[in-house]
Length: 379
Image (cartoon, rainbow, N blue to C red; front, top):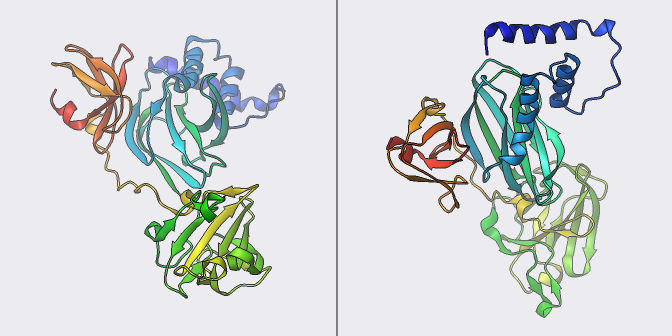
């Protein structure tokens, strides 16, 4: 694309934005920056041009050509400014995890990258529902209300591109509720049988020495403090933000009272074995309820190691490689991933993204997948 044509297009957009006061447009209320930009292209009569149509088609591409990843995930990637393009990262999330997305610009000719998150409603019918968008500094955080698959779409404005890094993490939404302990102290899990199988365990049991402090895992209101049946000495907290009720049972001491407001890390009691735990070692029974019991494990346990500091090897980005032997590419960035396709001698590959150990490649034929950096270094 010539710089002259690019300047003309950008000039039209600028002229349109400057003349808004003289035009009474149709009513339009954008839900996000991507939609607002689409509308600006429409008002500038660019959507019916070849470039405008390419940008619209690129916006749909991530839903068909999904990059399957497992969290946490990091990569440096490149989006060309020669033709409109977009990326779509597909990943699974558990209820109770907080998903953090951060995108940094390495080099770019744009400050506008539209980052939108969609929940997969129906894979068979290819139905997606938009649930969030990144802020102006390309950060996004969300906590799903149920286990689900999500698609994160990235698309720069028309005729813009560059090199970027992306980090997507999944971290617990709640702090661990027993001082000095972590998931290794959990010895009984949600759904374990109780009373000879007549009922299920509706929480996790965290074992610790008697009198170990029990900590508020989130800012919350104290709704109940007292003694109740199987739980013995209990405390109930209410998380206004999520609507979840947090249940702490078998306490030795209760150090809050009803209507208190607690902050994360405040001591609400101590570990004991009151109630039906009197014949077991001291432990905290921790449960979460919201229209029924919820497995609390993902809420309090960091199930996946957080990614290390990422130094992007940008020397490989955009590199073209001609294969001198047949090679298999995988559909995900993991050793156990399925084979996505076979590439043959003479095939041309372009490195679209790099990770700590893997590269994401694409061939002119449309074949794409992951290779290790060792695979790439052979060519």
